[in-house]
Image (cartoon, rainbow, N blue to C red):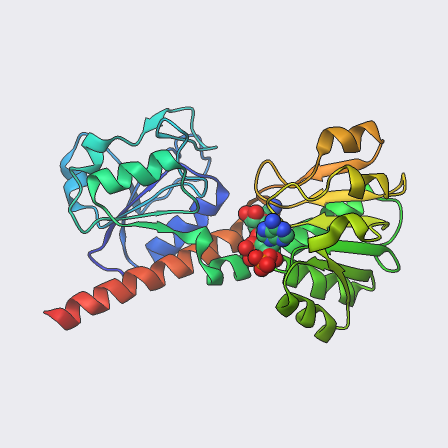
Length: 299
Ligand code: NAP
């Protein structure tokens, strides 16, 4: 339980709704900003008044998963209100106030250093990334079904990268019946691909590899799906690029060759906001509870 714990949830998307629900369930005192256009109202949440003394009570602030923009503005899909996360405002929070976000740009990171409040980047955590890979794979399946006229079963598929997302993709698409090859750059990852009964593509010499396939999924956040790769794809092939923006595909060249290529960011929040919100809320609550436990033990 988070009784007596004061949390402000500022901006965001449907994932934040689930986080607010969870915080209410755990009896936290919740303040919200950026949800004024939401049809549903949170009876147990109070509107955050930035100029009031609420700020002095805050134990945690939850920002949207993408954090802020380059000037500190916080985006939210449930409000037209422009919310600015400023140094002056953050300095009014208690020193122990923790700030949670999915990812952070240099503006947010530098701001947090200036104000000296702990910043938690949830998407950097292995546990969050692995749990999140589940809705990411489901979203990828959805996109492939929407954009092809052939079954995944029996298709030749190349997955680039065997990280937290790549591993889940490789396993699930193998189970669905695709003929899966995985592009990796280390001998350790190559051994894992072999152990999984899949074929290996050596990304250290991608220009010498056969890249012909029906479906190519990229998880590597560098330009790897280049001219050489795209030239080998048949006209019916589909590229799904999951890597963070701008992805790892030469989209202009794919378009010139008439190959459909999709950059598909943020799938968990699109296909399963409830699950994605729960994943974040659960991990966040674990971090907070651990901190509270340590503080109690120190007293
Ligand atoms: P990860 O665990 O860090 O895995 C990244 C993979 O890329 C690893 O296999 C890594 O190989 C490989 N890699 C990195 N740089 C490379 C390079 N220059 N050449 C060849 N391989 C390289 O990351 P993840 O959690 O799986 O996430 C992958 C990407 O998907 C990230 O950009 C993430 O932001 C994004 N993502 C997107 C969605 C979505 O909805 N679209 C959802 C979740 C994550 P090594 O192991 O050898 O380093």
